[in-house]
Image (cartoon, rainbow, N blue to C red; front, side, top):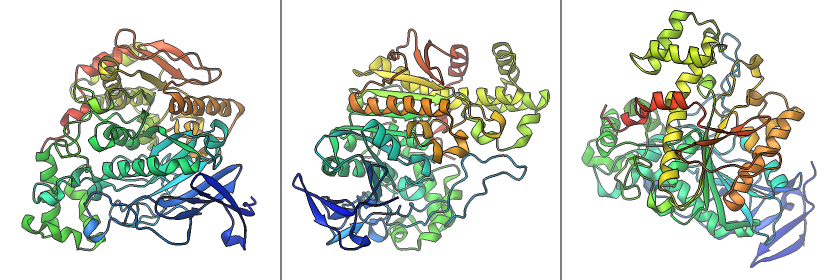
Length: 538
């Protein structure tokens, strides 16, 4: 596609048209607070990739709060995605798209370069003017451990152009580098267990300062994310320095109720130091040793995953443990899950399609120990036509993602001054003959209207799927625009309450239903959130 033959310079609210001199100098140029950036223009949208919003996190900045990027001279070309934050045990290879028995891996990741100079963001905007469009600020998934803002599913071109919004995606620190609780060993690291969240907040501050120059409205910023991105959105809603930086939020399949306690965070950090032969008194050595040495041991030291610690300076309490943070109680929020979240993880194993009755019972007993027979009886009665695999997917989903999202929605509905909107994404993907039903993350290509780039999870683009993408992307865009999710062809969305629990059932024909899966919700609630185990010293 042809790039612009002119470059635009936006400075002091004025757009200057300068002649292009060679291909390297074509494209729109915007003056940010730290230097000028040049993007590309395609399909009627200006795109800027890998804009620095923070300094490198290496060396003396490792485990520390983010710092502003160093200013640069000249024009920085922002044409390509930048490196992801260090994750896993080191550089990764491309994952195979299919399992050994031939089933689709819905979440097969791309190999991306890794660097500690990773505090970068990407911007899509329909125009560089003063119209002040709503901003959709996306935090990527992958738990607190993996991922980046450069997934093809997150391409903001269509939603920016068709919904007239500005889209921002970010990279931020993860796993040990974003959430190691080193404050127990030195006050210098008092907030090291929440630096990943502080990175997200630092990016929001960049948006507040700069997004007006990209045609966005710093007063209308919606923070949203899916899975780990939903969990990190939950953190932004409860981490004090974020107050006032956003106007609405969406938590997709990632309601974070509890995080680590100081005791459990310290236990992980002590194992990390021991694995690296570093005495607690010498904790500063963590800033000096090679990056790969830390990556190799961080997984075993966590015995699970690294996550924020409640009680740190920026995070005074758990994000949604019985109360709504006062700092975000006036923020309208949308919360929801997909109907069979767990099929995305379990379904890569073809054996799920051949479960015997005994294997089904064992799987359900793993959902809640000692309750397998009771769960089987309930799901058989409620869903007599469902396969054994679908019953497992529903039960495992209801026990975790679904239950926790209803706990958060209930708290918000009862304690917040602003409205809460709840949804269930029920559209079923045709991938692999429909055996995944409505898996984890299937809504993402609909939210971003990026179906053509999300075929691995959403299947080929059809008239029906595109119509749904038009509606879903409009719901999310209008949530950013005015705090109320609306879209042509979608019924009026009744805010959530704990009496009727109205829920938008998102599908090719969407509808409001009161308390869907109510019996399952009550059954699982009696067991308590699985996140109640967060904070136990292991």
